[in-house]
Image (tube, rainbow, N blue to C red; front, top):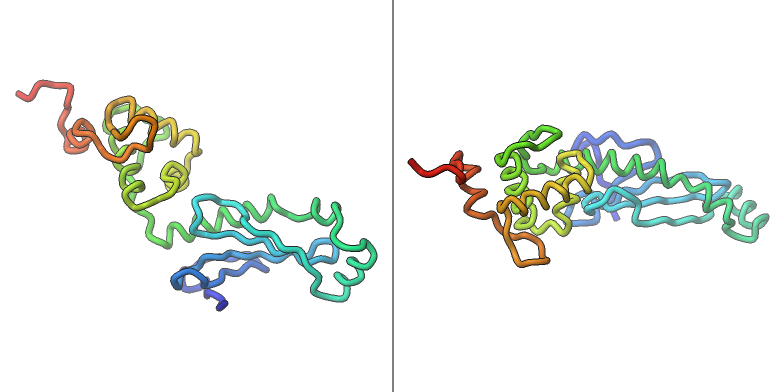
Length: 197
């Protein structure tokens, strides 16, 4: 495994964190090391996963202090596990994952107000959702919530409302997979609720 140079993308990595080049030449595994009560703790995440949290945790002995700690405690203890800084690691991972998404070339999403009020706003949301689905995003709602910097619940509510407004269609009970004619008309500046004079 080779180490990826974060300077290539201008990433600001905290001390004791690094990115490994393990997936198609792109930074994938983000790993941070902590000294916890004489043990070394490695916390890892996949920067291209549709979430912002750790996916791996390793605890091991690396030096004399760790060996002494292991001998005294007869191995890893509950105190060691409770002292693992998962909250701090989650914050670091979320920050770097956001930087990677920006450098990766996330789609140019339209700027929307915090509160969506017009059919055009919801048509833009529907369009972005379909683009994410067609791009093969496994969790398009989470993906868009991260790009728009809103909660997953808010994004899900917006998609639901767009579907209720007749802007998205698909099989009942399944993921919407296409824009409706009404959505296309709104995006093209036509008001589908007015007669075509």
